[in-house]
Length: 438
Ligand SMILES: [Zn+2]
Image (tube, rainbow, N blue to C red; front, side, top):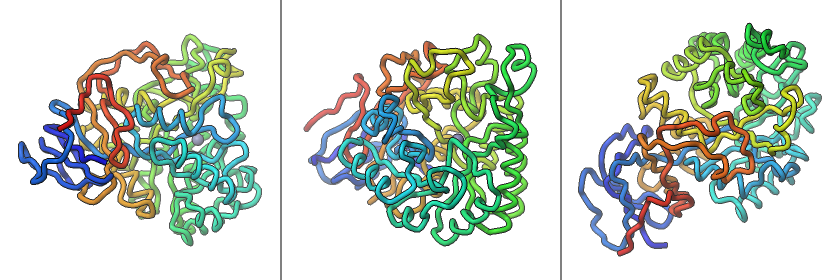
């Protein structure tokens, strides 16, 4: 493979505290050299990608997505999901085990790994179930799953209803040093719920999902993390109360990390007015106050990372009455564009946003798949190149994902992924990006 010099971009690598114009050389799938300003590498056998005016950063890592394979290939496959991930700037995606069958044993993990190797165009890291069949009754073979290479355990899509089972899972998380990713939902309060509970749900006549349904579970599992010393990761935090609980738990030294999605950071429950089923998501879009608290939590590191919760569905799935539509947003391809609004509004610094998409999730995954989320010399050459200021309109016909279910269709976003490099190969590039051979 010929070497590639990424020339003249603004290199931002939070893992090394770098934020400077420079050149980056990729050779044999690895980052091989970095130069400041116009400094060029000593060798000359490379192609050149002109990145002037663009940001060059580590490839994004998504700790939470749904690739739907095996079982729901009409919604997404590993091939289409990783193509969508590449368009969104993601070079590593961690897939949730709520497939059919669920990823609760070694054979299913091997299936994901082999499909990813043959059909995926970015790295796919599987997450194993907490409970057998995601039934919430007995623990899955966590040891077997850990040896098969899962990076975490989760029954995502459903909570772990039994405190006893969650306690056991957290105990095991210590043995394997792998986190339990927690979908926090007290089902007794969410049965039949369609959207955030409040004035708008009342006006629309839709059954509400109260913030308390999430916060009760966050509180319970923080208590269990304290009891066991286990590693807890709270998925898709959506409420101000959850942010407060996590902040206090961290102050007490409880081992917890947390994630927030682009949609919970940028959209509110008002999106549901008009009964747009593409704005139906679980946990639901919340209020302006919640969004403010989530942004604050992101800034003060109460919330460690941003994860998409990419949840593709077919058009037919969502073309129905609001009550009947499944939850979820297809998120890979709009993630950066929508998150950049936070930077343009002055809510968060660009380098901090990049950290939440690269170095911070890499820390949660750990080192078993090599050093991810960094442009350090010798690391896998996973690189995302984006234009922070380019405006574009979301056209779901352009999606690589089979899931066109997004409330952002037709919306103008500012900030666009221009090229994605995975292990030294250009797996996505915008038409305007030229690679000059020499
Ligand atoms: Zn979930």
